[in-house]
Amino acid sequence: MKNEPLIIERTFNASVERVWKAITSKDDMKQWYFDLAEFKPEVGFEFQFEAGTDEKKWLHECKVTEVMMERKLTYSWRYPGYDGISFVTFELFPEGEKTRLKLTHAGLETFPSDVPELKKENFEFGWNSLIGDSLKKYLEGTTPA
Amino acid sequence: MRRDVFQAIADPTRREIINIVARQSLNLNAVAGNFQISRPAISKHIKILTECGLIVIKQQGRERYCEANLKSLSEVSQWIEQYRTFWTKKLDALEDFLNKEAAASKKTVNKQTRTKSSKKLKRK
Image (cartoon, rainbow over all chains, first blue to last red; front, side, top):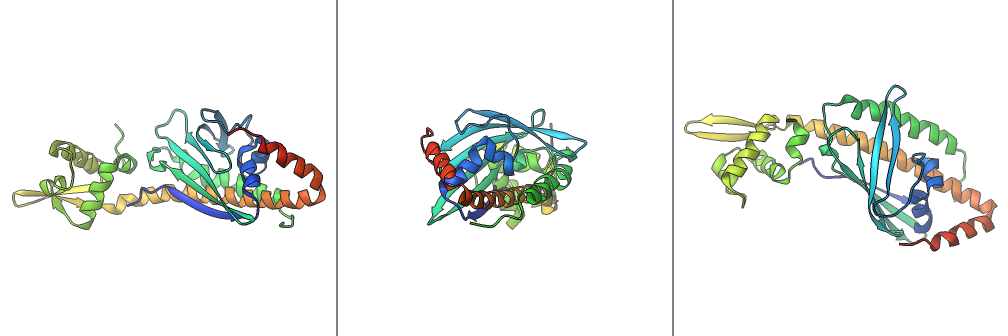
């Protein structure tokens, strides 16, 4: 039955230390994720960011719930004013020189289905172009390690 | 109160009920027989599931059978697919970033090493 969390695994050609920095350092996160005012990998740390389409930005509200240095990071992920709460977990596994990242996004089914902007528009038009195209273009043309 | 497929599957007991009746249509007693919790509690869950459109109650003789209506679950996978797309793109971007960083660090090895060792001091 479809209520398993969303899980994506990816192996990066980088050390656990570097991947951890990329997912927890504000300056690094800005390069591939979101431009946060502040980020601290500490339980209880709260942060917000806006993402969405040009017409409508959605405020995302997150709170760090679990930190295991260079191993695991979990934060809640919700939309203030709307039902539902989800949790995003990054887990890092060293594999020789490389690092396997397991991303788990649980609780997506708790989000309301009657807010169209929270679904389709948000992802297909807004974020995709933001993260898929602009960032990729910005980062492209670099040689792998 | 909100009544949709997300509400329906937000509860583990309801998810299990869907699992059970998806395999075969059962009457209420048979469904309740799979659980430790009380029959009225199961009955309430089934009521919610019918209101959410995931279960259809069919009268057969004196028995009322619960039948799964799984069509509405496609709504959920659509929802998850959107996040899958989102995270896939984000991880693509992360990969690009890490590669770019590695390439840049070749040029400024000393600076990179310094940054790394300072990060090691970070608290748990």
